[in-house]
Length: 231
Image 1: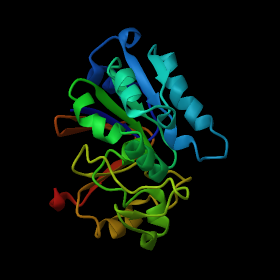
Image 2 (image 1 turned 60 degrees about the vertical axis):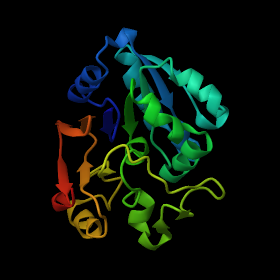
Image 3 (image 1 turned 120 degrees about the vertical axis):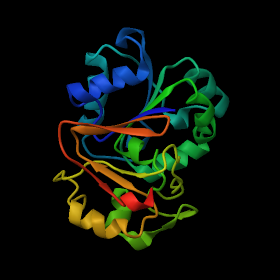
Image 4 (image 1 turned 45 degrees about the vertical axis):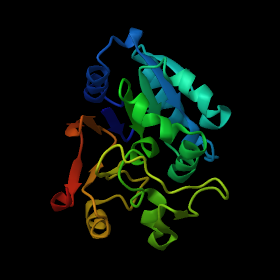
């Protein structure tokens, strides 16, 4: 299985190179299915989403937009089997989890990722991990996220707490980003004590390249690995 887990998409040359290496094809011959679903509940300016798409466009990738609520499971399977990369954008992690299950994509992914790469931005990276317990809303209100089977942190009636578990660690993007004041080393260290997995926290100029379980940190910035002894 091949994954690239980012905070901020293809935000620098190192991450873009790692992405191209992961896919193993020329960008002009690479078909990317971009899933913007997590952004749907966000009602503020979405320049960040446009930037994620623009990064792909300027590097020459073919990009199709695949919003999960718009497709039935059989339609998704047909669309995605013709793609090289499933690229999951950022936004509301718990809304994304709901639609990953509702659309059937969470069930389809193990088969699809035998031949395709997975890439994530922010929520799209968090959901690939072993738990959503260090997503932004549980960081702010840890009592609100009891477990993966009981969650009310996303939009009413469209919220789930199920991670994809594509990797056996927790993913925490936006390390030391001023827009995420709780995503600092001291605070994460304290919260990570309650998490039964290693935790990779990395900034907007870093990413995790994962090939068949082997993790490589791609960085022009800062990152930290917590809970090393829980791996």
